[in-house]
Image (tube, rainbow, N blue to C red):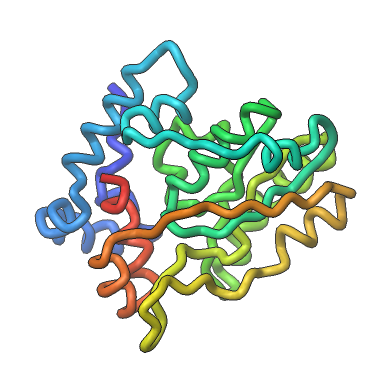
Amino acid sequence: MTADPFDIGTWGDTTAARLALRAAAPLVERLLDLRELRRLYADARSRQDTTFVHAALDALRVSAACPAPDLAQVPAAGPAVVVANHPHGALDGLVLASVIGHVRQDVRLLANRALAHIPELHDLCFFVDPFDGPAAAARSRAGLRAAHLWLRQGHVLVAFPAGEVAHRLGSRTTPYEAAWHDTAIALAARTGASVVPAFIEGRNSRRFYALGRLHPLVRTVLLPAELT
């Protein structure tokens, strides 16, 4: 039987964190709407006639579109780094993988390591820790090395340089995109990759922006529920 990627007792980095999450499971299950996430995940996994990216988008009832002139900016061959804003969360990666897939099949994403709980994403993503600090940097090294090699081999990498989903800051009433980190551009410079900018239209719920003012970790925890 496939392990449940939404078992919150497996999410923590330490035994203490996992035990705390298990203790809070009933509340967290309702807050994150994990029952619906499990249903959507099962729906996506049941669609055997397509890729997981397209199956997930179908389950979410999301269609991705890009004007032909914009799509033509993605090089047909050679290494490329697609850099994009981050209005939603995991949905942004699924959308870009789908859209770029019309031009290139060799697309992988630089993604939050929290998504590593979903096994179908292991062949699509290089996982990193988007938060600052020595521990985060250490946890990101393997993913960044793999992303560097991927570009060296002539493939396409999608990155969200803000490192976090757009949110409301202070008295701002519109979503705010954090200052972009230079990691993606550095990878492009080191590998001779083309840089392709992308813009994704959209925003999350009012609840996400309201509660997300409390702390960046709160925003991360709330992101799964934004898919439902």
